[in-house]
Amino acid sequence: MSNKKRRTKPRTRNETQKEVGFLITEAAYDVICSQGYTRLDRNPEVLTGCRRIAELVSSMTIYLMNNTEKGDARIVNALSRQVDITPNSYMTRKTWIDIIVMNLLLYGHGNSVVVPLTSGGMLGDMVPVSPSSVSFVPDGYQYRIYINGIEYDPADILHFVLNPDPDRPWKGMGITTAIKDVANNLKQAAATEKAFMESKWRPSVIVKVDGIAEEFSSPQGRHRLAEEYLSTTETGEPWLLPADIFEVEQIKPLSLSDLAIKDTVELDKRTVAAILGVPAFVLGIGSYDAKEWDNFINSTIHSIAQGIEQELTRKLLVSPQWYWKFNIASLYSYDLKTTAEVYSSLYARGIVTGNEVRDKLSMAPMQELDKLVILENFIPVDKIGDQLKLKQGGGEKDGQDTDSDKKQGI
Image (cartoon, rainbow, N blue to C red):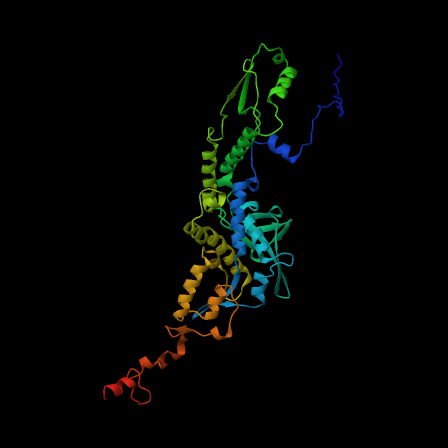
Protein backbone atom coordinates (compact mmCIF):
# COMPACT_ATOMS: atom_id res chain seq x y z
CA MET A 1 0.00 0.00 0.00
CA SER A 2 1.22 3.43 -0.73
CA ASN A 3 2.00 5.69 2.23
CA LYS A 4 1.40 8.80 0.21
CA LYS A 5 -1.48 10.93 1.40
CA ARG A 6 -4.16 11.54 -1.07
CA ARG A 7 -4.27 15.20 -1.94
CA THR A 8 -7.67 16.69 -1.84
CA LYS A 9 -8.44 18.55 -4.99
CA PRO A 10 -10.00 21.93 -4.28
CA ARG A 11 -13.50 22.17 -5.54
CA THR A 12 -14.27 24.72 -8.17
CA ARG A 13 -17.14 27.16 -7.88
CA ASN A 14 -19.32 24.95 -10.05
CA GLU A 15 -18.76 21.99 -7.72
CA THR A 16 -19.66 23.83 -4.54
CA GLN A 17 -23.11 23.86 -3.06
CA LYS A 18 -25.54 25.78 -5.14
CA GLU A 19 -26.47 29.23 -3.89
CA VAL A 20 -29.92 30.63 -4.40
CA GLY A 21 -30.69 34.36 -4.37
CA PHE A 22 -33.63 36.48 -5.35
CA LEU A 23 -34.69 40.10 -5.46
CA ILE A 24 -37.95 41.35 -3.97
CA THR A 25 -39.62 44.71 -3.60
CA GLU A 26 -39.91 46.51 -0.26
CA ALA A 27 -43.63 45.70 -0.08
CA ALA A 28 -42.94 42.02 -0.73
CA TYR A 29 -40.21 42.04 1.91
CA ASP A 30 -42.68 43.36 4.51
CA VAL A 31 -45.05 40.47 3.72
CA ILE A 32 -42.45 37.71 3.59
CA CYS A 33 -40.43 38.97 6.57
CA SER A 34 -43.31 40.06 8.75
CA GLN A 35 -41.82 38.47 11.87
CA GLY A 36 -39.01 40.00 13.90
CA TYR A 37 -38.06 43.63 14.45
CA THR A 38 -40.47 46.33 13.35
CA ARG A 39 -39.17 49.84 12.71
CA LEU A 40 -41.07 52.29 14.87
CA ASP A 41 -41.11 54.99 12.20
CA ARG A 42 -43.22 52.62 10.06
CA ASN A 43 -45.89 52.28 12.73
CA PRO A 44 -48.65 54.86 12.08
CA GLU A 45 -49.57 55.32 15.75
CA VAL A 46 -45.99 55.78 16.96
CA LEU A 47 -45.12 58.08 14.06
CA THR A 48 -48.26 60.18 14.60
CA GLY A 49 -47.52 60.72 18.30
CA CYS A 50 -43.87 61.58 17.70
CA ARG A 51 -44.73 63.93 14.84
CA ARG A 52 -47.23 65.79 17.02
CA ILE A 53 -44.62 66.27 19.76
CA ALA A 54 -42.01 67.48 17.26
CA GLU A 55 -44.47 69.88 15.62
CA LEU A 56 -45.39 71.47 18.94
CA VAL A 57 -41.83 71.86 20.24
CA SER A 58 -40.63 73.29 16.93
CA SER A 59 -43.49 75.81 16.75
CA MET A 60 -42.41 77.63 19.95
CA THR A 61 -40.29 80.77 19.74
CA ILE A 62 -36.89 80.57 21.48
CA TYR A 63 -36.20 83.54 23.76
CA LEU A 64 -32.77 84.70 24.93
CA MET A 65 -33.40 85.80 28.54
CA ASN A 66 -31.38 87.90 31.01
CA ASN A 67 -31.73 87.15 34.72
CA THR A 68 -31.82 90.54 36.52
CA GLU A 69 -32.61 91.64 40.08
CA LYS A 70 -36.02 92.92 38.99
CA GLY A 71 -36.92 89.79 37.04
CA ASP A 72 -36.09 88.08 33.77
CA ALA A 73 -36.06 90.27 30.65
CA ARG A 74 -35.91 89.20 27.02
CA ILE A 75 -32.80 90.09 25.01
CA VAL A 76 -33.01 90.80 21.29
CA ASN A 77 -29.63 90.77 19.55
CA ALA A 78 -27.69 88.96 16.81
CA LEU A 79 -27.27 85.82 18.93
CA SER A 80 -30.99 85.53 19.70
CA ARG A 81 -31.76 85.96 15.99
CA GLN A 82 -29.18 83.33 15.05
CA VAL A 83 -30.77 80.64 17.23
CA ASP A 84 -34.44 81.57 16.83
CA ILE A 85 -34.54 82.66 13.17
CA THR A 86 -31.54 81.27 11.27
CA PRO A 87 -29.92 78.38 13.17
CA ASN A 88 -28.91 76.88 9.83
CA SER A 89 -28.53 78.47 6.40
CA TYR A 90 -30.49 75.68 4.74
CA MET A 91 -33.45 75.37 7.08
CA THR A 92 -35.74 77.36 9.35
CA ARG A 93 -35.88 77.19 13.15
CA LYS A 94 -38.97 74.98 12.96
CA THR A 95 -37.28 72.45 10.68
CA TRP A 96 -34.11 72.52 12.78
CA ILE A 97 -35.93 71.81 16.06
CA ASP A 98 -38.15 69.25 14.33
CA ILE A 99 -35.07 67.23 13.31
CA ILE A 100 -33.64 67.38 16.83
CA VAL A 101 -36.87 66.16 18.45
CA MET A 102 -37.50 63.37 15.92
CA ASN A 103 -33.95 62.11 16.43
CA LEU A 104 -34.57 62.10 20.18
CA LEU A 105 -37.82 60.18 19.92
CA LEU A 106 -37.24 57.79 17.01
CA TYR A 107 -34.21 57.82 14.79
CA GLY A 108 -31.46 58.52 17.35
CA HIS A 109 -32.83 56.26 20.13
CA GLY A 110 -32.82 59.10 22.67
CA ASN A 111 -29.78 60.95 21.30
CA SER A 112 -29.58 63.93 18.96
CA VAL A 113 -26.26 65.54 18.01
CA VAL A 114 -25.73 69.01 16.51
CA VAL A 115 -22.35 70.44 15.48
CA PRO A 116 -22.10 74.23 15.98
CA LEU A 117 -19.79 75.97 13.50
CA THR A 118 -17.93 79.13 14.52
CA SER A 119 -15.93 81.74 12.64
CA GLY A 120 -13.83 84.34 14.45
CA GLY A 121 -15.53 83.56 17.73
CA MET A 122 -19.01 84.12 16.19
CA LEU A 123 -21.62 81.40 16.06
CA GLY A 124 -22.53 80.24 12.58
CA ASP A 125 -24.60 77.33 11.31
CA MET A 126 -25.59 74.56 13.70
CA VAL A 127 -25.62 71.33 11.71
CA PRO A 128 -27.79 68.37 12.82
CA VAL A 129 -25.94 65.08 12.39
CA SER A 130 -27.54 61.91 11.05
CA PRO A 131 -27.87 59.31 13.86
CA SER A 132 -26.27 56.67 11.65
CA SER A 133 -23.07 58.75 11.51
CA VAL A 134 -22.69 59.11 15.29
CA SER A 135 -21.19 56.72 17.83
CA PHE A 136 -20.57 57.18 21.56
CA VAL A 137 -17.50 55.58 23.16
CA PRO A 138 -17.27 55.40 26.99
CA ASP A 139 -14.08 56.75 28.54
CA GLY A 140 -14.38 55.95 32.24
CA TYR A 141 -17.03 58.24 33.64
CA GLN A 142 -16.66 60.45 30.56
CA TYR A 143 -17.20 59.64 26.90
CA ARG A 144 -16.13 60.62 23.41
CA ILE A 145 -18.26 61.32 20.36
CA TYR A 146 -17.27 60.04 16.91
CA ILE A 147 -18.91 61.53 13.82
CA ASN A 148 -18.02 59.71 10.60
CA GLY A 149 -14.96 58.34 12.38
CA ILE A 150 -13.71 61.74 13.58
CA GLU A 151 -13.37 62.22 17.35
CA TYR A 152 -15.05 65.20 19.03
CA ASP A 153 -15.04 66.49 22.57
CA PRO A 154 -18.60 66.46 23.99
CA ALA A 155 -17.95 70.00 25.26
CA ASP A 156 -17.76 71.19 21.64
CA ILE A 157 -20.91 69.37 20.49
CA LEU A 158 -24.59 69.89 21.29
CA HIS A 159 -25.74 66.49 22.57
CA PHE A 160 -29.45 66.33 23.45
CA VAL A 161 -30.58 63.34 25.52
CA LEU A 162 -33.98 61.73 26.18
CA ASN A 163 -34.51 59.09 28.91
CA PRO A 164 -30.93 58.77 30.23
CA ASP A 165 -29.37 55.32 30.49
CA PRO A 166 -28.91 54.40 34.20
CA ASP A 167 -25.46 52.90 33.49
CA ARG A 168 -24.34 55.70 31.17
CA PRO A 169 -26.26 58.87 32.17
CA TRP A 170 -24.74 60.87 29.33
CA LYS A 171 -26.48 58.65 26.77
CA GLY A 172 -30.21 58.49 26.05
CA MET A 173 -32.29 55.33 25.64
CA GLY A 174 -35.32 56.77 23.85
CA ILE A 175 -38.61 54.86 23.69
CA THR A 176 -37.64 51.86 21.53
CA THR A 177 -37.56 49.18 24.21
CA ALA A 178 -40.76 50.25 25.96
CA ILE A 179 -42.89 50.51 22.86
CA LYS A 180 -41.53 47.76 20.59
CA ASP A 181 -43.92 45.00 21.68
CA VAL A 182 -46.97 47.24 21.39
CA ALA A 183 -45.88 48.32 17.91
CA ASN A 184 -45.63 44.67 16.86
CA ASN A 185 -49.16 44.04 18.15
CA LEU A 186 -50.51 46.98 16.16
CA LYS A 187 -48.72 45.77 13.04
CA GLN A 188 -50.21 42.30 13.43
CA ALA A 189 -53.69 43.76 14.00
CA ALA A 190 -53.36 45.85 10.83
CA ALA A 191 -52.24 42.79 8.86
CA THR A 192 -55.16 40.74 10.21
CA GLU A 193 -57.65 43.47 9.36
CA LYS A 194 -56.22 43.84 5.84
CA ALA A 195 -56.36 40.08 5.22
CA PHE A 196 -59.91 39.95 6.57
CA MET A 197 -61.14 42.82 4.40
CA GLU A 198 -59.50 41.36 1.29
CA SER A 199 -60.77 37.82 1.88
CA LYS A 200 -62.96 36.38 -0.86
CA TRP A 201 -64.82 34.12 1.61
CA ARG A 202 -67.19 36.86 2.75
CA PRO A 203 -70.35 36.62 0.58
CA SER A 204 -73.38 38.61 1.67
CA VAL A 205 -75.85 36.52 -0.36
CA ILE A 206 -76.02 32.75 -0.92
CA VAL A 207 -78.05 31.35 -3.80
CA LYS A 208 -79.18 27.72 -3.47
CA VAL A 209 -79.42 25.95 -6.81
CA ASP A 210 -80.96 22.60 -7.64
CA GLY A 211 -77.93 20.35 -7.99
CA ILE A 212 -79.74 18.11 -10.44
CA ALA A 213 -79.80 20.94 -12.92
CA GLU A 214 -77.57 20.12 -15.86
CA GLU A 215 -76.03 23.59 -15.95
CA PHE A 216 -74.82 23.27 -12.35
CA SER A 217 -72.49 20.36 -13.09
CA SER A 218 -69.65 22.52 -14.47
CA PRO A 219 -68.10 25.94 -13.64
CA GLN A 220 -69.05 27.17 -17.10
CA GLY A 221 -72.65 26.19 -16.49
CA ARG A 222 -72.79 27.90 -13.11
CA HIS A 223 -71.30 31.03 -14.62
CA ARG A 224 -73.90 30.95 -17.38
CA LEU A 225 -76.70 30.62 -14.83
CA ALA A 226 -75.38 33.60 -12.86
CA GLU A 227 -75.14 35.68 -16.00
CA GLU A 228 -78.63 34.72 -17.10
CA TYR A 229 -80.53 35.12 -13.82
CA LEU A 230 -78.42 37.19 -11.40
CA SER A 231 -76.79 39.77 -13.64
CA THR A 232 -78.64 43.10 -13.84
CA THR A 233 -78.16 46.22 -15.92
CA GLU A 234 -79.13 48.76 -13.25
CA THR A 235 -78.37 49.07 -9.54
CA GLY A 236 -81.30 47.92 -7.41
CA GLU A 237 -83.00 46.02 -10.20
CA PRO A 238 -84.75 42.90 -8.73
CA TRP A 239 -83.81 39.33 -9.62
CA LEU A 240 -86.45 37.16 -11.36
CA LEU A 241 -85.65 33.54 -10.47
CA PRO A 242 -87.49 30.24 -11.12
CA ALA A 243 -88.81 29.05 -7.73
CA ASP A 244 -88.17 25.38 -8.47
CA ILE A 245 -84.47 25.91 -9.27
CA PHE A 246 -83.21 28.81 -7.12
CA GLU A 247 -83.57 29.74 -3.47
CA VAL A 248 -81.93 32.96 -2.22
CA GLU A 249 -80.76 33.32 1.39
CA GLN A 250 -79.12 36.34 3.02
CA ILE A 251 -76.39 35.75 5.60
CA LYS A 252 -74.48 37.96 8.01
CA PRO A 253 -70.73 37.71 7.37
CA LEU A 254 -68.17 37.66 10.16
CA SER A 255 -67.18 41.23 11.14
CA LEU A 256 -64.13 42.77 12.80
CA SER A 257 -66.19 43.20 15.95
CA ASP A 258 -66.59 39.44 16.14
CA LEU A 259 -62.80 39.11 16.09
CA ALA A 260 -62.45 41.71 18.90
CA ILE A 261 -59.74 43.50 16.89
CA LYS A 262 -61.23 46.93 17.57
CA ASP A 263 -60.94 46.57 21.36
CA THR A 264 -57.40 45.23 21.11
CA VAL A 265 -56.27 48.00 18.78
CA GLU A 266 -57.85 50.66 21.00
CA LEU A 267 -56.07 49.26 24.06
CA ASP A 268 -52.73 49.19 22.22
CA LYS A 269 -53.22 52.77 20.99
CA ARG A 270 -53.86 53.93 24.54
CA THR A 271 -50.68 52.15 25.60
CA VAL A 272 -48.70 53.91 22.86
CA ALA A 273 -50.19 57.24 23.91
CA ALA A 274 -49.23 56.61 27.55
CA ILE A 275 -45.63 55.68 26.65
CA LEU A 276 -45.20 58.71 24.38
CA GLY A 277 -46.96 60.98 26.86
CA VAL A 278 -49.54 62.26 24.37
CA PRO A 279 -53.32 62.43 24.89
CA ALA A 280 -55.23 59.44 23.54
CA PHE A 281 -57.31 61.67 21.24
CA VAL A 282 -54.12 62.53 19.32
CA LEU A 283 -54.12 58.90 18.13
CA GLY A 284 -57.84 58.92 17.36
CA ILE A 285 -59.13 57.50 20.66
CA GLY A 286 -61.77 59.55 22.49
CA SER A 287 -62.58 63.24 22.08
CA TYR A 288 -60.63 66.44 22.64
CA ASP A 289 -60.18 67.58 26.26
CA ALA A 290 -58.68 71.02 26.98
CA LYS A 291 -57.43 70.05 30.46
CA GLU A 292 -55.77 66.92 29.13
CA TRP A 293 -54.16 68.97 26.37
CA ASP A 294 -52.75 71.53 28.82
CA ASN A 295 -51.39 68.72 31.00
CA PHE A 296 -49.72 67.28 27.88
CA ILE A 297 -48.06 70.67 27.23
CA ASN A 298 -46.96 71.03 30.88
CA SER A 299 -45.49 67.54 31.08
CA THR A 300 -44.26 66.02 27.83
CA ILE A 301 -43.67 69.13 25.71
CA HIS A 302 -42.21 71.20 28.54
CA SER A 303 -39.87 68.37 29.58
CA ILE A 304 -38.40 67.95 26.07
CA ALA A 305 -38.17 71.72 25.64
CA GLN A 306 -36.29 72.07 28.94
CA GLY A 307 -33.72 69.51 27.83
CA ILE A 308 -33.05 71.52 24.66
CA GLU A 309 -33.01 74.82 26.59
CA GLN A 310 -30.45 73.62 29.11
CA GLU A 311 -28.11 72.14 26.50
CA LEU A 312 -28.20 75.36 24.46
CA THR A 313 -27.59 77.44 27.61
CA ARG A 314 -24.76 75.18 28.77
CA LYS A 315 -22.87 75.12 25.45
CA LEU A 316 -23.66 78.39 23.65
CA LEU A 317 -23.72 81.06 26.38
CA VAL A 318 -20.86 82.50 28.42
CA SER A 319 -22.73 84.99 30.62
CA PRO A 320 -24.12 83.31 33.78
CA GLN A 321 -27.12 85.66 33.70
CA TRP A 322 -28.28 84.59 30.23
CA TYR A 323 -30.33 81.53 29.34
CA TRP A 324 -32.55 80.19 26.58
CA LYS A 325 -36.29 79.74 27.03
CA PHE A 326 -39.08 78.36 24.85
CA ASN A 327 -42.36 80.27 24.76
CA ILE A 328 -44.37 77.43 26.30
CA ALA A 329 -47.38 79.68 26.99
CA SER A 330 -48.13 79.88 23.27
CA LEU A 331 -49.24 76.22 23.22
CA TYR A 332 -51.89 76.31 25.94
CA SER A 333 -55.53 75.82 25.02
CA TYR A 334 -56.69 79.46 25.03
CA ASP A 335 -59.46 80.71 22.80
CA LEU A 336 -59.65 84.32 21.64
CA LYS A 337 -62.48 85.23 24.03
CA THR A 338 -60.64 83.96 27.10
CA THR A 339 -57.43 85.72 26.06
CA ALA A 340 -59.26 89.02 25.52
CA GLU A 341 -61.02 88.82 28.91
CA VAL A 342 -57.85 87.98 30.85
CA TYR A 343 -55.67 90.66 29.32
CA SER A 344 -58.41 93.31 29.40
CA SER A 345 -58.69 92.69 33.14
CA LEU A 346 -54.92 93.01 33.54
CA TYR A 347 -55.01 96.21 31.52
CA ALA A 348 -57.70 97.70 33.75
CA ARG A 349 -55.57 96.95 36.83
CA GLY A 350 -52.45 98.60 35.45
CA ILE A 351 -50.49 95.37 35.06
CA VAL A 352 -50.07 95.44 31.26
CA THR A 353 -50.27 98.18 28.66
CA GLY A 354 -52.86 98.43 25.94
CA ASN A 355 -50.28 97.54 23.30
CA GLU A 356 -49.44 94.33 25.17
CA VAL A 357 -53.13 93.42 25.03
CA ARG A 358 -53.26 94.23 21.31
CA ASP A 359 -50.18 92.08 20.72
CA LYS A 360 -51.88 89.05 22.33
CA LEU A 361 -54.84 89.61 20.01
CA SER A 362 -52.54 89.87 16.94
CA MET A 363 -53.28 93.56 16.49
CA ALA A 364 -50.83 96.30 15.53
CA PRO A 365 -49.60 98.60 18.38
CA MET A 366 -50.87 102.16 18.87
CA GLN A 367 -48.78 105.04 20.16
CA GLU A 368 -51.39 106.13 22.70
CA LEU A 369 -51.46 102.76 24.48
CA ASP A 370 -47.91 102.54 25.80
CA LYS A 371 -48.76 103.70 29.34
CA LEU A 372 -50.13 101.75 32.28
CA VAL A 373 -53.62 102.80 33.41
CA ILE A 374 -55.68 101.84 36.45
CA LEU A 375 -59.19 102.02 37.98
CA GLU A 376 -62.37 102.88 36.16
CA ASN A 377 -61.09 106.23 34.87
CA PHE A 378 -58.14 104.64 33.03
CA ILE A 379 -55.73 107.33 34.17
CA PRO A 380 -51.95 106.85 34.09
CA VAL A 381 -50.46 105.09 37.10
CA ASP A 382 -48.25 108.07 37.98
CA LYS A 383 -51.36 110.32 38.13
CA ILE A 384 -53.30 108.30 40.70
CA GLY A 385 -52.57 110.83 43.46
CA ASP A 386 -54.15 113.65 41.44
CA GLN A 387 -57.71 112.27 41.73
CA LEU A 388 -60.12 114.78 43.37
CA LYS A 389 -61.62 112.22 45.73
CA LEU A 390 -58.21 111.60 47.26
CA LYS A 391 -57.59 115.28 48.10
CA GLN A 392 -58.44 116.83 51.44
CA GLY A 393 -62.06 118.02 51.57
CA GLY A 394 -63.37 115.40 49.14
CA GLY A 395 -63.51 117.75 46.16
CA GLU A 396 -62.28 121.26 47.12
CA LYS A 397 -60.26 123.07 44.52
CA ASP A 398 -57.67 125.58 45.75
CA GLY A 399 -59.77 126.64 48.78
CA GLN A 400 -62.97 127.30 46.78
CA ASP A 401 -66.28 126.03 48.19
CA THR A 402 -68.07 123.29 46.31
CA ASP A 403 -71.72 123.58 45.24
CA SER A 404 -72.82 121.24 48.03
CA ASP A 405 -71.10 123.41 50.64
CA LYS A 406 -72.90 126.54 49.42
CA LYS A 407 -76.28 124.82 49.58
CA GLN A 408 -75.64 123.86 53.18
CA GLY A 409 -74.67 127.44 54.05
CA ILE A 410 -71.10 126.57 54.97
